[in-house]
Image (tube, rainbow, N blue to C red; front, top):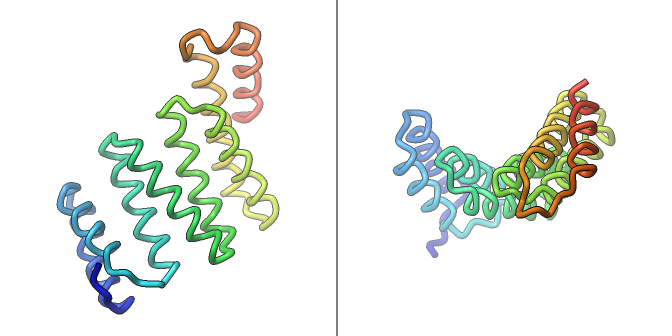
Length: 166
């Protein structure tokens, strides 16, 4: 790991963001990973890098790496006590867990987003949490994970999904 100033790391991160915007995900991820190796103690920069990497891996369909980066974003935002960033990381995690068919964690994350949103009075974020929750219930109800969910449980999840989308 190379020790760089936060400004040097931000400069590298900006280059990675630019690559992602221009559609060069492979190079963008490579550059953002390099920025992450800067060994900075700037937690907000770490949150940003992990969030961007999580979103980039999500877009490329690598949901395990996306989950890992969104989890690192959540950990860094908790250290900062930044509730808004925690809620955003949880929202990203919920979406990722859905695609990993980990519905219990997806539902937990979505509920935490809703709780944070209510606490800070952010209606847009609350809507995002409800959408994630509804989507998790919908996927949980419609996808049979090796017979783990019974018909009455699927019906319950469909009903809960409808409630979230109303």
